[in-house]
View 1: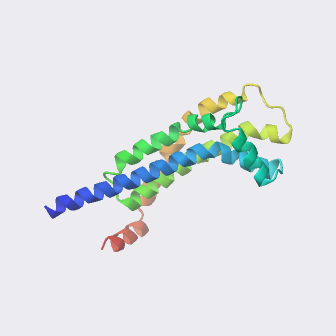
View 2: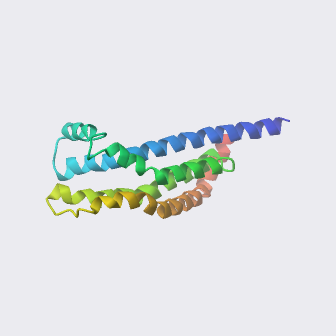
View 3: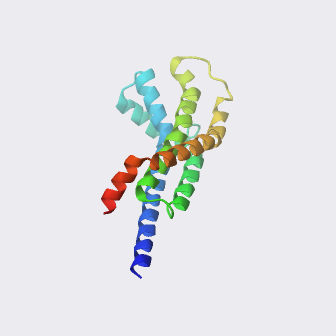
Length: 173
């Protein structure tokens, strides 16, 4: 009976941790477009950080800009990551789940950040931007799903490393 109780406790803990990682990844996904714009404002356009933050906040729900909607549509791969984490939380320990979550986040961001930069960069350096460039924001979330899968696989392989298994077995003792 104690083994059944212990197994249920571990599943609850891992599910709670999967929810934590899911919420954290969704927050990262929602903030990514604004963070890219902030970095372009500060490091390329040489605006002050406070002016950049004020400008980005004023455009979160502004007609014609609506960065919030842009971030919300970009959450598609982060929702996929959340579903994978909730499913795998029943089978992976907390350390392994964290490795998989971080691998998935890195996989998504490895394509999402450069893609957003490539769309917005011409506006900050005075180059001509294609009138259809914003269509990329429709495709970017879907293009981020294969790198997500690669990141999940990489995170899972890292979670199998002997170093993490040793730390985990010492901590569980």
